[in-house]
Each structure stands twice: as structure tokens, then as C-alpha cells.
Image 1 (cartoon, rainbow, N blue to C red):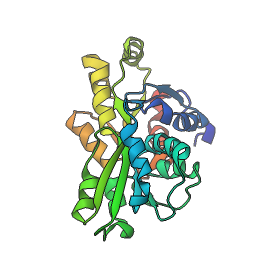
Image 2 (cartoon, rainbow, N blue to C red; image 1 turned 60 degrees about the vertical axis):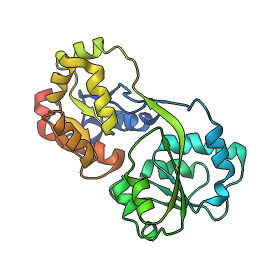
Image 3 (cartoon, rainbow, N blue to C red; image 1 turned 120 degrees about the vertical axis):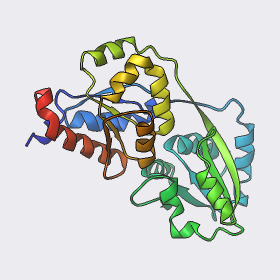
Length: 266
């Protein structure tokens, strides 16, 4: 068996997360010998008009629940809230994933409803505390657009819902010429995808040659929904982590390249 800190020695891994969310995952890859190559396929920017968000923050006393869909939502919203007001005593907090819950802890919010295993809207909706929502007022902090499943389901359960858009996502304009050259020479050994939107953006960014290379490169994800999107796009090597979060991705990378490592002179 490879030494723990050498399990990905010689492996170049394309990390497609927004740059703000890539740091810890990249550190984890380096810790086990891999080489992370950062290609953010989603860019996180401020909303053009903050007044609607600020007005909603003024009305936080009206809400029973505040739900955050991503660490970006936490950081963008809480920075404003911290400057603007004290959090209402009765407000309860929920997060779609562990990363968002951890981000809330940085702002002193330690009691957060978060799924235990799968970190997505479906898993959060299964939590007992969100079953009977009749008459409850809920605000969901998120980026522009996004999935409606969480909000729609809570409204079906009787909640009064408002969205607070606290950042925007957009596809960055990047030159991938050198990346495609390296990829064509067999120097990209794996790709990490953490959102369906990001996968679609990557598909557009890398062009036809890149798409063909992607279809024959192992793609790692933690979500079944993203795995389905990958299949629809014709990707042939999809590796779904058995556990959620960065730990699940790192473990999947270790397990995969322990088996296939001879191909890469490991």
C-alpha cells in the first residue's frame, strides 16, 4: 500500500469549484501527494443592488427559519448582517451542507440544522424539524436562480417563503489553451465536479476537444444528481464518492488511484 502522504503522487487533478471554495480541497489533495489544478468554472460576484437584501435583513425578526444553501451565501449574508443588526433571538438556522454549517460557526452560530449524511436539499427536507411548516416564515439565502426544490417543498408544507439573493454566479471567461494542451498529452488524470451548473459551464469552457478528453477522464463527484448530469453529457468514467464532503472526494481519489496507480507509475 502507498504511504498515506504519497497516495496521489504524480496525479494531476482538475478542481472546478469557485476559487473561494477550492482552498481546503486543494490542501487536502496536496496532503496525499496530488497536484490540484484550479479551474474555477463558476465565478461568485456581489449582487448589483444590495438594497433588497439589506431591507430583508432589517425584517429578520419576522422569520422563524433562515436557511443557507452554500458557504458563499453564509459569507455574503452574514457580513452584511453583522454590520447591520443583531440576530433575532428566536431565529433558527439550517444549512444544506456541512460547509455552510461550518461557515456559520465562524459567525458564532453553532446550533444549525444540517443533514448528517447526504448534503443536499433532499436530505435537508427529510429532517424532522422541517416536516410541519404550517405558518412558519422562512428565508432562504442563496445566489441568483438555483434549484427551487427546497423552497417549493417548504411552501407545500405550509411555510411562507422569501428568497434572499446575496450573490451572483456567472461563467468566467478563461483561456484554456494550455490546459487542453496538457490534457491532450495525458497530464490531467482526474476532474472534480461539485455542481451540475459547474459541469455545464466546464463543458462550454473547454470546447469540443476538451469535451472529448473529459469523456475519457475520471470525474469525481459526491452527488447522484451531478452523476446523472454527467451521464447525460456522455461522460464515461464517473466516480461517485460514498460519503459526502471533501473527505468523501479525497477518499474516493485515494481508492481509485490505489487500484489504477500502475498506469501512472505510482
